[in-house]
Amino acid sequence: MGEAEWRERTATHEARVDSATAAHLARRRDHRKQPVEDFLFTYYSFKPAQLRRWHPGAGTALSGADTAPHSGWRFYAVAGGRVFVDVDAFLSARGDTLRFVRELLVRTAGRPARFGCFGLHEWAMVYRLDASDVRHSGWPLRLGASGTDAVVESHQVACSHFDAFRFFTPDAAPRNALRPTRESQPDLEQPGCLHAGMDLYKWAHKLVPVVPSELVMDCFELARDIRSLDMRAAPYDLRELGYEPVRIETPEGKAQYAAEQRAFARRGQVLRERLITACDEIMQSAREST
Image 1 (cartoon, rainbow, N blue to C red):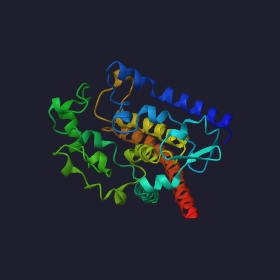
Image 2 (image 1 turned 30 degrees about the vertical axis):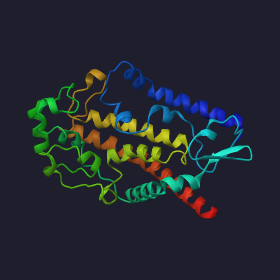
Image 3 (image 1 turned 60 degrees about the horizontal axis):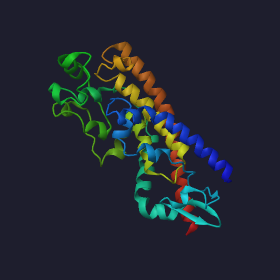
Image 4 (image 1 turned 30 degrees about the horizontal axis):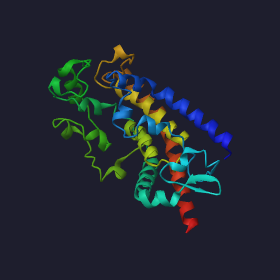
């Protein structure tokens, strides 16, 4: 890739990230918290500055290595005046991660999506908790504590995602139809799950720099959009922040939730396949180099 092109793509990516992270960074400077969007920067370990770095992905060499910042970054090599991702070095350090991510994505993509959970995982995270122990205690529960507990008790909770289930309250966990564990994650993950869709961002940033930054940002934007539904369907009243609730305790709210969930599942499957393809290409290039 010529220098003019990679500089243009770098600038485009940086502007895209700056737009997506500006509000969070402003809140961080002012020591303010926002329960919806900040999740993407507190739960996931990729920092805004890391997200802002543009990577071409494996298989693309950038001309003008002497002016490209990539030459000083980890997992890059320089040869013939060009800088490129050192796939062998990446696989030596993170090969197990890449293989795990690929297996998880392939197995998830091959399962039918389920759309009957209605976001009850967020309700199970506050079930029978004292108000002072609720995670987002600065925001009221729409139905109050007793009303929230009644919603959990009147539904079958069926969360398949371990990283949601592990935050269930002790009283809520036995009510779940499944018992997800870290070990069973590849066996239970399914493409209709909102958290599985959000986690595509996690898997993408764990594969930096062998995956292109455009794919990482596509996954980030999906995670951001899913997070909005996740919290609109949660028991909290966030209307002051502009989040109109999806009232999953009603038939109309359930229908709305499932419709949005299906749309996110379709978007997620496209990104999941792109990540799988990237993993396959990286592994293939490594085999061809040996």
